[in-house]
Image (tube, rainbow, N blue to C red):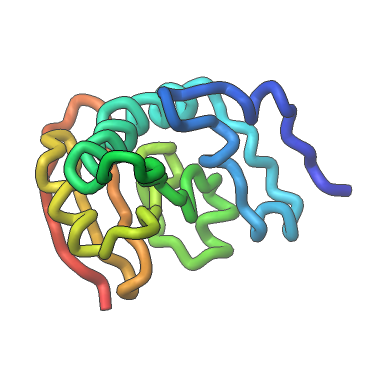
Amino acid sequence: MAIILDEELRAVRLDRNFYLGEFLDSRTAAAHNIDMTPSADVMVRLVTLTRVILQPLRNLANEQYRQDGEPEYVMALTSGYRPSDLNARVGGTVGSYHTVGLAADFTIPGLTLQQVVDLCRKIPMIDKCIIEFDSWIHVQHPKFGREPRHQFFALP
Ligand SMILES: [Zn+2]
């Protein structure tokens, strides 16, 4: 029997353009009946990730690239929170920041990955920004109490 997430939980707004549900959607989790309900700690980290990194990035994309009259650029999240069993199933590294709610994978349709990386360089709290498999960007916020390492690189 599939675990259905509470709709009210999915609709929790983390910031202007981000809803909790986007961070919890996973076809693999659905296929394997993995419970995506976040703990309170994970919720706090997802809010922080969103307010300190993702929403500012989205704002920057629109400030820098959007022309008058054109629709806003949006961020397409491909992976957000991953409980450990989901992380293992999708081949995530052990201890991945996704498992604690401090990382997200995304693209900004209409912008190149390099353009997105250039925007990421303007966000002081990015711990790591990784172009993964030439397909999407991984960003992570430092664990609480740690300084951001501000590392930028690509995984082939
Ligand atoms: Zn990632």
